[in-house]
Length: 122
Image (cartoon, rainbow, N blue to C red; front, side, top):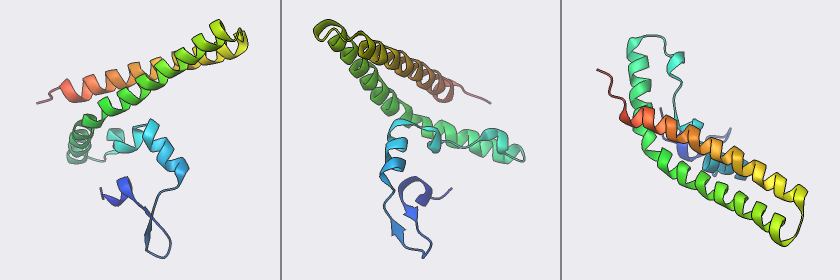
């Protein structure tokens, strides 16, 4: 795995350019690009290497958990604001729904981190 995959975007002429904003935003919020698919491994050595890589990369999951917890609190706060102060029930329902979605994302991140960081396979 090269470091170019994680930090820079190569153009067709071989020069290295910055990533597009959409890609940066995706990588800021979602962590799947950090990990390797263990099920795509062809043999036991590749599977072990992918598992070790994923365990190493799990150190960044608390950063994503912090980002998603901010999103959860932000969405819930906007839901409260629209419900209490502005009496906009449709908008408050929208933000409360998104706070539930981001809370679910936090659960997924926590479970992935607990499995990858704590499991010791011999």
